[in-house]
Amino acid sequence: MGTNAAFESDAPPAVGIGTEEVIVVRDLWKAFGANKVLQGFDLTVRRGENVMVLGKSGSGKSVLIKCIVGLLRPDKGSITVLGEDALALDNDALDRLRVKIGFLFQSSALYDSMTVRENLEFPLRRHWIAQEGSDSETLVKEALENVGLMSAIDMYPSELSGGMRRRIGLARTLILKPEIVLYDEPTTGLDPITGKEIVELILRLQKKYGTSSVIISHDLNVAKLAANRIAVLYEGRNHAEGSYDELRAMTDPKVKQFFIFM
Amino acid sequence: MLEVGAVSRFTGRFFREAFRSRFEWRELVRQAYLNGYLSLPLVAITAFIMGLVLTIQSRPTLAEFGAETMLPAMVSISVVREIGPVITALICAGRIGSSMGAELGSMKVTEQIDAMEVSGTNPFKYLVVTRVWSTILMLPLLVVLADAIAIWACYIGVNMKGTVSWSLFQQQVFDSLVFNDVAPALIKSVFFGLAIGVVGCYKGFTTEKGTEGVGRAAHSAVVLASLLIFILDLLAVQVTEILGLN
Image 1 (tube, one colour):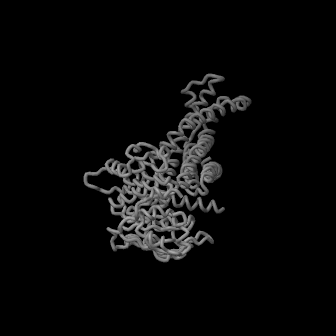
Image 2: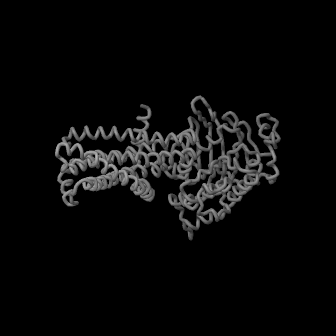
Image 3: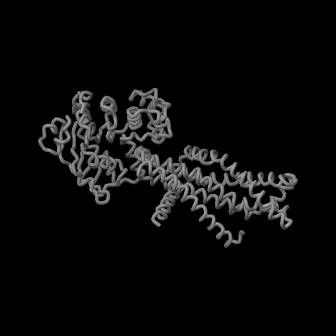
């Protein structure tokens, strides 16, 4: 595949992972018409843990995290986030919960009518988190320095490359200091070097802010670098689970197919 | 029929959200600027041409009956009661409706609306309520401006083949206009503004199927809003007739 050279480091150590369960998904079902996407999927994420959901394109990975954050309503099952039943919350309570959850979209989803500065200020203006000695300008600059793109502060999204957009998206996701971050295909569409930079950035910022993460991807390089634990989603159900090395050692053909190019 | 139901539900949601705090004042002012202030040149030019053409084309018929002096009254009543509000609304349906459909449609297919929602911001309140309020508030103002410019163009038209002083012209206009000409026209322009805003936002907010869907949203927003303007105009005429305001 030619991408492995860029991804040489090992999975992150499992230090700093707590026992508190920040996301608990049980028996999740979701169908679109006759297409049953999720058929009883379970997921548990502990504080400080990076869990990757691995699956083929169209297997329902994005549907899963959209259910967790309330963009889609599952047909059946339960979702508990930070101790709250996410499916029982009213709109205001759900908005309050969402402030504690960051979501990095595959397309970055930057507001294209706003500059980078305005994109970062947008969540701040709505959910001001009082921090001693910090104003909105300071927080925006800190977020941009974190992703190494201070020079892009007055640029519009259309002037940014794919990798820059992903970094700005990450800065916007983290600016409210969420406790949990959901990453939807964070490296898809990027070259291996930029992909590795994004993963390293994710790990560095996770260490800095102590977030828990769910990473949705079909890219095993991301799994190798970032995941403490990997859940394989196959035909809407949990098919296998373990660390990168444990999955790689499995003889199950459905798991092995993901390692075909590794 | 399904679409009528969906637009009605969307309108109902607008009214539910429109009076709930928190209000997005900053975005409302920005939308009022984009949809109102930036529509001024187009509305003004169209109103000027409309007033002038109406005057020039009406003169021969009135002259045939020796009623040329009725020209200011006839044009001003036509403009204030009917042509001003409808033409202004149709121009806004084209300019504002298509831009709302395309902008929100583009935001929908690129997940920007989802991004807003997951950041804990109600996208309906931020994007739809502000846009619809802006058209409701701006359309009557644009109609008043269009009426004034069309009447001024009528003054120019009248003086192209004759001499009427500005003060006499004004007197003829104001003598002919009554409250029942102005108030129903302004009230119906509020509903035209509601229709343009709701349809533009609905089409954008429900866009599907990528860039093709964005184009379709912009196009169908204009078509549906224009159709609704004529239907609302017909209803307004019936209501004023029933209330004895004609």
